[in-house]
Structure formats: C-alpha cells, structure tokens
Amino acid sequence: MHKLLKVGIFLFSSLTCVASHAETPAADMDQASKNYVKALDLGKNWPTMIEDASVSGAEIVKNSALEGIDENLTMTDDQRRKARVLVVEMAPQISEEIRNFQRSIVIPTLVNEMMEASYQKYYSAQEIQDMADFYGSPTFQKRRIVNDEIAAESKRSGASPDSLEAQYAARFTPQEKQFMDDFVNSATAKKMQQVGAKVDAAMRKFLQQRIMSDVQTIVNKYGKILADRIREQQ
Image (tube, rainbow, N blue to C red; front, side, top):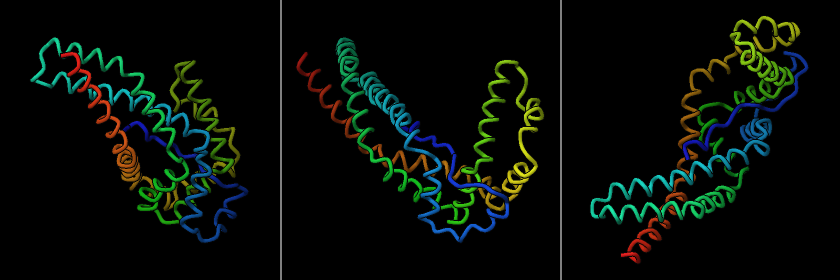
C-alpha cells in the first residue's frame, strides 16, 4: 500500500507573461486545490496507479500470510507446507478482492481528502495557486517534453543530462526562461523546498490510513479461510 502513493506535479493554468501571473486574483483554497488537481490529470494517471497498488496490495496480503505460517511455532513442518500451498492457491482470489477494493475507491473524493491532509496543511491557497499557475503553464509543459528528450538522448548516447542541457536550452525563448527563473526564485518555490518532504510524508500517511483498514479486513478474511482449511486437512 505504501506504493499507492507517488503522485506527480503537473498543474493547471495558462501563460501569457509574468505580468499576467502577478495579476492572478487572491486564491480561494478550494478553487486553488481544484486547479491543482485538474492539472494533475488524475483521471488519466490514477487508474494505472490503482492497478499497480492492487498488485502490490495482493502481494502484501499473500506475503503476510506466508510469513505468519513461517512464524507459527505450533505448526508441524507438514502443516506449514500444506498451508503454504493453500496460500498460493488462494492468491488469485486475494488479488481479485484487493483489485475490486481498489477500483471501488472514488477518486475525486480521495484526491480532495488527500489535498486537505497534505497540501492544505502546509501551503496557503495562494501558494497552491502559484504552483498550479506555474506547473500547468505551457512553458512547464514544454520543459517536461524537453526533459524527456534529454533523458532519452542521455540513455541513447551515454552523455550526462547536465551536458545535454546546454544544447536544449536554445529551445526556450528569453520570456520562457525568465518565467521559469522567476518561479524558481519565488517564495512559493522556496517554501516547496522547505516543506516538500513533509507534504510527501503527509500524503503517504493519509493514503496508508485511508486504505489499510480495508486491506486489513481482507487479510483477516483470508486468514480465517486459511485457518479453516488447515483444520479441515488435519
């Protein structure tokens, strides 16, 4: 479940010039958060994350059962062997149940709750809007594309990304460079450096607390099934 969370930052806005950014109205927390989430495009990215988490969750449940068998000192070696076989046989059922649980999550609600538990605890509405304005801008989207190209070229040629950066720098206009520099040097960007790790930790904690009780219910269910089947074989 700890893998459920790794959400990137690609946010919402439009860019004309630095002056237009300065003219953004005072941000409302709910609206700023919606702008942030909209630009993250979680509707596109989250299903893949949910599927990855389902696979991870099923492995956690299965491995927990196997560890429990190994640590059970009251079982004979033959009982442990049979129990391990049963866990492997139940693995597809466990995977499907975890997957169904993950798919039942209402993504918009989860995202809103996650924002409240993390970003809204550490950032003001205006800071969240600042991030949305920057990361959702055409300039940052262009920066992302260039970064991908640099990474691909580095992998192909073996050249370091830093050495390739100068070659790609010409792709940006002076206005675009200024826009990026202004954000990097802004109070919001500095705040991100200061509290970024805490925000990430808060997101992980929220997601773990939000779903682990349900996962534990599944663990308990299959633990009982396993115990019953072991007793039947005795």
